[in-house]
Length: 508
Image (cartoon, rainbow, N blue to C red; front, side, top):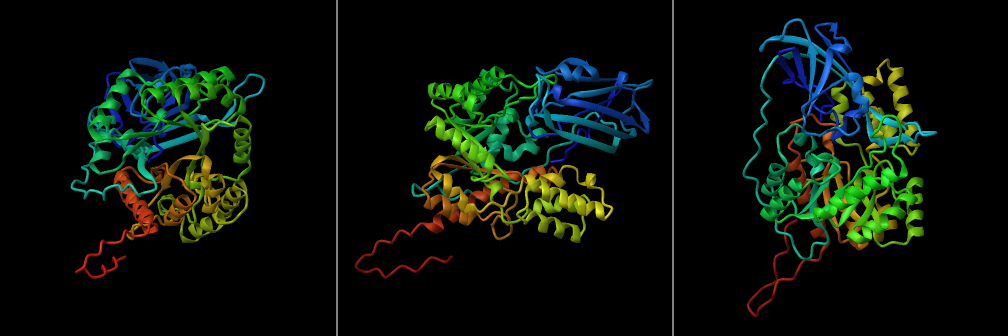
């Protein structure tokens, strides 16, 4: 998923000079207040900030007005225009060298809270686009999709898990506008994926955090047509929505309550929560009880079930003693190798064979994550390689790939309410090369888990748009999970009649 604000079809003619059709450089919707910096250079000439305006949802904002726009949502599929005033408008077909530097902060990824009523520190997203673009009036077309995919084997009552996916798996394609919401669900049904459907609210709700009546109607129409089942509602908590301060405790509760109400409107039994603050959970539990919703905190790489932050959550759960509280197990925590998709991305960014081998060696050690990151960055600097060429990959390689033993999930199995069956690749043999799915299936079957496994392809964090069809990969991952489940089950004996012979053993 290219981390860019502009793409090949972004440069547009405009009566005031030129316009850039912007794409949100993230996989979830953000508030306009998240935009910290926009700097534009055209053909080597810096455009003064006073000559730039952002046009979004029928309104215009000067750059210095953006930090105050904490109520204006930049929905994932929206493309606001960055308009630059020039002495003469550009003409269709002209080519120009465009450099756009953007800085955003991610309001739900807090590093440290604010002090004395001030704003906290949040994870930044820094984008630097430099492209030679042709002025156009049309969007790039979406690619043709592969038709005629063979249907999956039917689900069996003896299958221990129900399968589904999170629509997050198609983040890049949804952001690019290759699907609207209904079309995305149609494609999922066409490939025989399901029945479980999980959403990330901040990604698919145009009126986030509110679930509108229009969205409910579209949701129910698709579910009626395809027989889907709502599995998990992903809720974020945008503590840094305002730039001048963090959310108060009351605002955190009110924001969370809105999403719990929305999950209930859509028929979800479970909400994936982002915060497990004891005080917030105490206030949310009566809401969850009234709405009959489970609340599940996600355990994601680089943490595992017995990491110190998760042990604190487990202690909170023990104090609250509610059967509605549990965990989402994300298999990014339990990888035995780095994903080939990530390794391809860092090679594109300039790493040679020695550097890629060093990255994998450092990743596999048991040192704390920050020490591993710094060791690898120091190695790159020692070879006169600017780590900035890797963008976020120098950190994501460690943050998004954990190597906790898969058997640790057994320690909290009764509290696992939902599974993110994270994956990055499916190889020619039908296996995930970095995650041991047969062993994970064995652990969860033997320990009695019987909920949803929601496929989550996160290769879009490293892959280029159009490099693969993620929904086809999800379908292949479903095939892998089904094989792994059924290989654990004893075969059903064939009935023997007076004239029959023993059946031939099935070919493996």
